[in-house]
Length: 210
Image 1: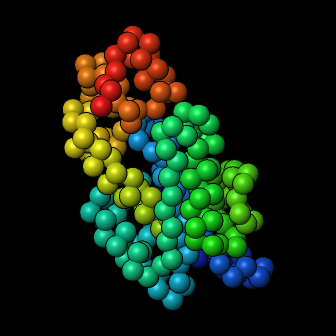
Image 2: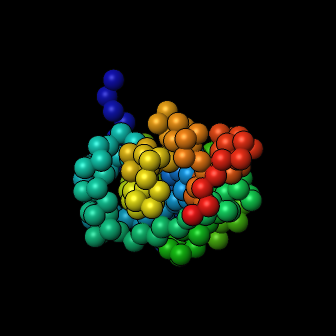
């Protein structure tokens, strides 16, 4: 089966409806047990689209890093986050939408192409939800790459502060090694307390305070 190649169709259609600042939007970090959720909004220049944009999940780390730099060099980019506290207070879906809303507002887009099935309720502009948008829409693919690289770098930095959980490799996702570290080392301030594996550890009274 041939791989799906994203294109500029959705951006062109939005521009044809009169929108001047069309941005692709994606988020990363719904599934991890630790760290923020990160969103990115990208407005591509149709004459300077980096070659090889794809859904970040199917790219190698080196290719993502290279495309990340290319995107920053030729596109308008905004990155935003929702914190661990916001995730625990709001729930992960609402927090991920909050990060998207912040990214779009910072970019100043007048129409957002959103990966998924839902448009965030407080988006500052109109939006179009695109199922598998990161696979079929170039702007969303670019946003997925920038969001992924940005959040991975955050988790590498946090891994230096809290060694042993493997965040530099697992980005906070519930791998076997991460779950074992939770049991052995306890819960850090960067863990999402509303997530069941973390909540269960806290209930057992095992936490790290610094």
